Length: 251
Image 1 (cartoon, rainbow, N blue to C red):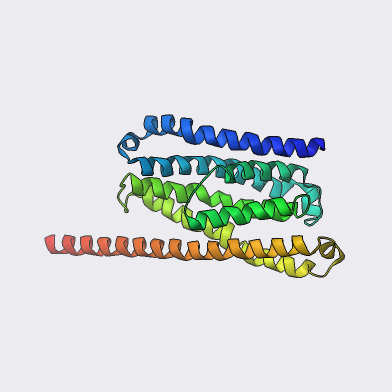
Image 2 (cartoon, rainbow, N blue to C red):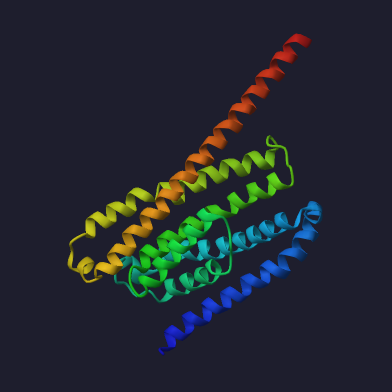
């Protein structure tokens, strides 16, 4: 077994263990310290809470490093299909350890299975594309924070909730939706080239189908987030109009 392969396997295993420790021990202790409402949650809510804490930690780590690689990793920028994937492999290995350590609803499972399938089948190629997909993780902390606020019964119109909701919508749109057209334009631009043909049918098929699955789910989530954002903005406007009317009557 090559030293590089051993390193990747070691990172996957280490990532799995670390995220399990975060889930089972660190999150319980930390959450109870910083949020008094945590102790009053049901067992099911605590499990999801801890899962989202781990998700946020993973997203900040993988998303930040992924953004750095996206901007500065010269080998994969120069050749997105066949560029040296050494640095990106470390990020993918970290993400893979996380993906196999968590559970969730059916869409969560489908999303993670699609990602894992792509990561393992395209090993050694398409590093730039794989890292590009990891940038989507930058939206997860805001999605998780929305759930925390909702679980702790923060008022929907509270400043913290509104600001997080706006940031969640904007960041989700930028890293998961705006990113869609450039990706498929790139696929179109390299389709049929010698570098693309060398990938082979299995990798070509896996690359395109997993991207389609992930992007359909992202669009579905974006629609849901947008509807929620529009609803909150509408309710805020109604509340302001009601207050203005009441103030007018008092005058």
